[in-house]
Length: 120
Length: 120
Length: 120
Image 1: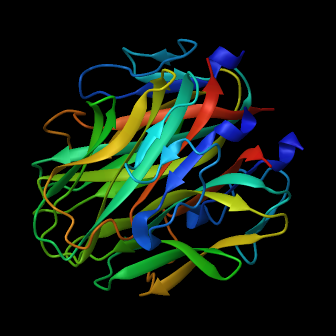
Image 2 (image 1 turned 45 degrees about the horizontal axis):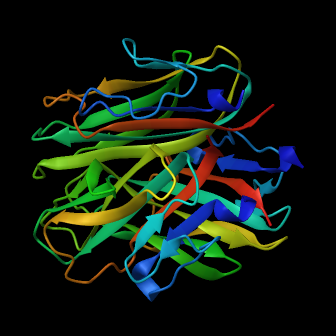
């Protein structure tokens, strides 16, 4: 059970740094909760050489929970960051969705992390 | 005791996502620690269509612990973010204070999260 | 063991807020892991009155794990932020490195936090 507490994706090197319990689906980039509890999620999505505004949503079962923005036109790299504690039911799906704009350089430098703070 | 470990406010939908233990006072937006320990706090305060610089302080018993800034004039949405681990005594009060500037759109999109990492 | 779970440096007041277990070397600003496990690290490095772009790397044993950027020329204070979950071996060294640019105002307002999520 302890080994089910942790996930992360860091898409820069197309590599997951930590995926304890294998609850992060690499192809879909979706975390599926192994158990009910309070989870901490945070993300930093980096916009590279892109004059568009981006909006990134953290989704829980297709419902947007929190948003982050990056909209500076004169900056080569800028991050849309946010983080949250979430009550998650078993088998809930949590993932990032690019709601607005495009990531021309892909998800380079971006991170998405989460872990179980405590079970319920 | 386990159920006293967690709080969050996300003021966008005037809704607290998680408030385990009811230690977050919704009206005052102040967290009062149920017990002594190390807590993790993080916040992302979003400035919307506002040319002023904002400074947000994380306060512990009326003492500023850390600050965050957002000062871009040409951006529609920009976040002042920071996070910290804090040694907190029982009944200490932890909250956010807008030290400089105004949030014209209110606390929309902003988040404030905290949880007990371990008790002391 | 419980008391070995936590570190933080906040260089603004040249002060470490929390350094449980004394695993953070203040002079070198390097965290040395007391045990194997999954750690959460996050940092917010604030650039003050500086037109240069900065790049901050989180290093694990001289290997860059994640990067953050701040590159706005017109902003008085801007943070390069990121966070990550890391699998850390006993005695691994984790620290921040300013890969590009300079911090003219020093590490004022910057934070670097980490704690053991669970041991392995």
